[in-house]
Length: 300
Image (cartoon, rainbow, N blue to C red; front, side):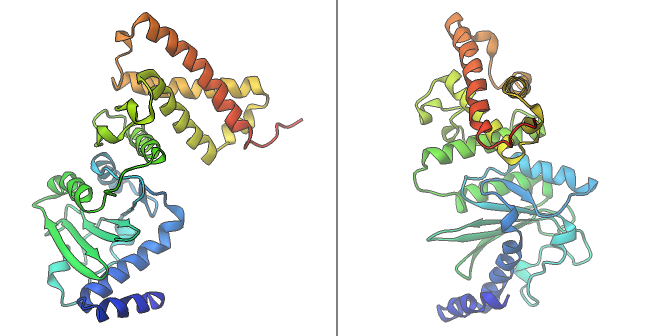
């Protein structure tokens, strides 16, 4: 907290309420502890989840739609219970100290940085979200229950934390892959997203058609996975074996897409079916070529 003191002092000198300035600084200090292990655009648990935490995290993961350059931390009770608003600020108290707290902290950095702190526990007497900017308490949203809070929180995030400027192509790529990772993890077709920002749903964003967009999604998803964990490829040995790993991984994702009816493959024309087959083979080659550049040499 000491490193935040100059920022707190500046906020107060600029006329911000000392209570909100100190509370925002406290939340930012906690979040900074976890930022090295977080990835922008993805809801990240900051501690291992217990069985009781799973359904709450999965509900948040389904509903919370994040633009690609904001941080979002999911805090289970083992972490969230230690984060208490300052005494005497009743409007920031949402849950009793003894009850298990579940918090989501969202940070948009940049010229107009913004911080959102949501309490989503079903034991909160006032579930909702508080919004801060430059030490000022901008306002809040209160909800009657957890069931209402989590879906409505997504609307608050869209309105108050999303980047408003035009996205670059890399942003559309990251946003679409993040959506698909959530969809695959939850195995449900109705994960919240803005279809106008997803190249899978709006292929013209990347100057592609439906089939090109499909294989771009497969490539980007697997490229990310293998970049994070190259173990399957390293164990595959030669190029033929690595091709088999890549092909199997692509088929696994295609089965998810088919099972959730994200694409109606039965409606493909003959030309689309032919292109699908060509793109499948081409993407396997491209994926293996890309990954071999970073994979460890095969054992002799």
